[in-house]
Length: 575
Ligand SMILES: Nc1nc2c(ncn2[C@@H]2O[C@H](COP(=O)(O)OP(=O)(O)OP(=O)(O)O)[C@@H](O)[C@H]2O)c(=O)[nH]1
Figure (tube, rainbow, N blue to C red):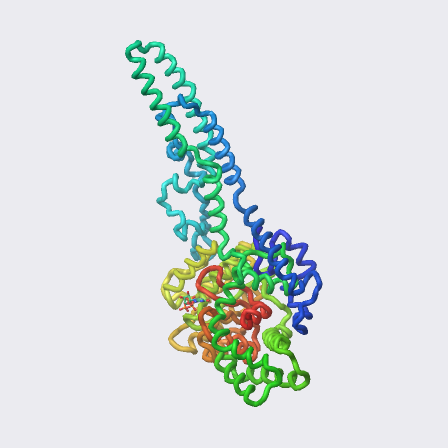
C-alpha cells in the first residue's frame, strides 16, 4: 500500500477519499478558535489523544507487518517446524558426521538459483526525440549500492528463497542419514568379530554421546529463527518508538481530523523530523515569545520584546507588525489565559501562511492526475534546487505519477550529472543533452516532446542558479518559460522558487528578482533543519504574497514534504 504524499492518503483509497476530501484537510475550526479540542470523533478530546495514538501505533505496526513478505515468515515458521521435527526424529544412532547443518545446505543450494530470477529488472529506455539521450532507469537498490553488480548471486538471494530451497534438501539428506547409516550400523554390527565388539560398543557410546551434544546447537529453536525476522521488521520502521515524538505527531494528525487507520509511518517520521528541524528556531526565539504572550495583556515592554524576537527569527518587519497588531487588539478586548493566548498566536500565524492561498484555486499543490503538469524549479545556486527536484520526483514516483526530469541547468556540467544521480535515486528518467553550451531551452523543448509521447503527468525542470550575470540568468529563465508556454499550452504550469531558509531576509531579495521573470507561483523553503531563521516562512508569504508549497528539513530523499501551515505552526510552537 503506497502513501500518496500529495493527497495525504493511501493510494488504494484515493478514489473514495478524493470524492469526500479533495484537498489536504485544513485544521478544524474548533482547533483554531478554541484551546479545547472538540470531543467529536474526528478531533478527540485531550484525554483521547493517547488512545488515538495507541490505535495509530497498532495500525502502523499491523501495516508494516502485512507489508513484510509473508513468504519469509511462513517459511521461517516452516523451517523451524521442519527443524524441530527433524530434531525429534534424530535418534542417537545417527552419526554426527551425517548431520548436515543449515548453513552447509544453504551453500549447496544457493548456486542452483538462476541469476535471472534474482537480479532486479533493468528498464532500458528507448532514445527519444531529437537524439536527446535519456538516462537508464536503474533500480534504487543498484544505485545505492545495496546490491553491488558484482555481488555473488548467493548474496542477492533473499533469506526466504534460501530457506524455501533448503528445507526439502535438509529432509532429503537427513532421511538418507537416518536410513542409510542405521542400516550400515546394523550390518557392520553383525560382521564385527567378538574381540572387537567391546571397542566398537565403546566407540558407539562415545558417538552417541557426542551426537547428542553436538546435534543440539544445530537444531535452531523456533525463537532463533523468528528473532532475526523481528529485528529486520523493527529496522524497517525508522523512528517507530511509542515515544514523546510519536505522541506529539499523533496529536497533530488527530487534531486535523485524521483517522488512526489512515496514518502512515512516513507522516510520523516526517513530523518528528520537522519538529526537530525547527528546534533551533523554537529554542532561541519562540519559547521566549510564548512566555511573553502567555502572560496576558501586552504592555509596551512586552511588545518591544516580541518585536525583537520575531525580527531575530527573520520574520521580517511587515509580518512582525501584522502579528503584534493582531495580538494587541485581541488582548485588549479580552484577557486570555496563557494557553488561549498561545492558541490565538497560532491562529494568527496559520492565517498568515494560508493567506496567499485565498487568491489561489489550489489549497495544496498536487499534480493533476491524467493531465500534463510542468513544474519549473528556479533559485540561486546552492539553494537546493537539484536536491528538491530529486525529492519531489521521489514523492511523485511513490505516489503513482508518471514523472520525468529535464536537466536544463546546462551552465554547469556537474549539475546535469547531479540531477541524473537524483533521477536514479528516485527511479525517474532524466532528459539531458551532454554537449557543451547546450541551450537549456532546447533541452526543455525536447523534454516536453518526450513527456507528451510518454503521457508523463509531471515534468520537473531543473534550471541554472548562476550565469555570467544576473541579466543573462533572467533572460535564460524567460526563454525557458516562453518555450513552456508555447510548446505546452495545455499544461498546468507551476513555477517554484527554491529558497534556503538560512539566508533569511537576503533570500527574499533574491526572490523578488526571480518573481517577475519566472512568473513564480510558489516557494520551496529548504534547509529548515538546523537554522534559527525558521520564521522566514512568514516573511515569504507576507512580503512576496507567495504560498509555500514544500519544505525541506534534511538532505535525505524523504526530507522534503508538501507544506502544511497547521503542522508547521504546531512544530514551531510545540511545547
Ligand atoms: N541540511 C539540508 N541541506 C540541504 C537541504 N536541501 C538541500 N540541501 C543541501 O544543499 C546543498 C546544495 O543543494 P543543491 O540541490 O545542489 O542546490 P542547487 O540549488 O541545485 O545548486 P546549483 O546546482 O549549484 O545551482 C547540497 O549539499 C544539499 O544536500 C535541506 O533541506 N537541508
